[in-house]
Length: 361
Ligand code: PMP
Figure 1 (cartoon, rainbow, N blue to C red):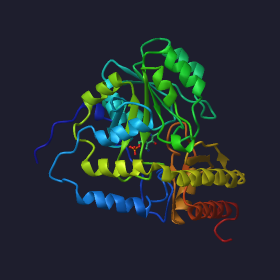
Figure 2 (figure 1 turned 30 degrees about the horizontal axis):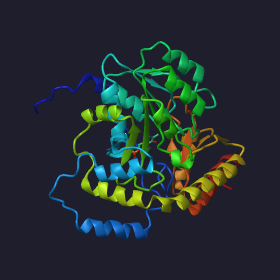
Figure 3 (figure 1 turned 90 degrees about the horizontal axis):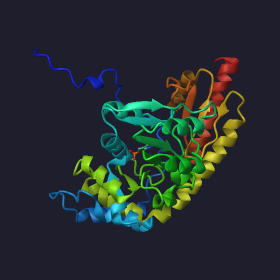
Figure 4 (figure 1 turned 90 degrees about the vertical axis):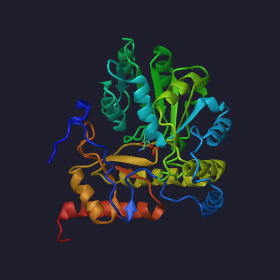
């Protein structure tokens, strides 16, 4: 068989991103909204689907959705860019501000896609690890940024997978101390009810990332967006795939966005679920439970991988981070429906009981 020429050397040693998504009765691993969009909204979508022109290319910039998001945020559509999930915009960020000879400042443990994108684009990664409690080492970040050679930074707030918000005062200081582009990834912002949106007026180097995948229950559709100064948006547009956001996604996104007020009960339920889970998990002395401002909770437990297996055997899929740097023995649990939360608690209790007394009890 004819062999093939090796790909770009940057791919050597790069692991493809693996969401470790397996079928389970309780899907609590991917930080999705546990409930599908309302039947009512689904009916509106089906109606609009009937007049969709499948034969035509979509509007490359999804201007209807762009305008709706701009209006809701008191901005112009030129301040918004829609992407095929936040993931696409993260890749575009690395393409536009990274590259050979350029530097990305990362604060791990955090969303691993950032570092992968940097490696793919030949960008040097400058890691400033978080402290023991997963808070950002603010002094170290500011000190490193003061050297003046960082091109872009991503601060995730609330952070995935650790759960906590970044300090607003720190982000504000960071924005003023550098001309590096600072992305604040607010993928989980609806669950903390915070945003850095007001700072856009003062800082041309601020980019906010948001997604429809979490609070707005559209992980299956692939829609995310950024808010930024129009000059910054123009740079993102240069590197994007022209038709990355298809016509169906644009229409579904617009329909959901128009109905966004109806998600506030869901969001409140998820926040209540998180606080409930935090309380129940904190009662289990074998677990270290990290406080969360998001729709998931990180826990540390001895032999975490074995715990993951025990939960999966009982129908509950959570995310195993026990082999990730800085997250030894950590599992991330997405908040589910009240029933799923109860199943998770029972499953953890069962595994812990088995550990204490062995299988025979
Ligand atoms: N940012 C963070 C912190 C995330 O956790 C995710 C999804 N896991 C994303 C961005 C991207 O989400 P999506 O591509 O579904 O919009």
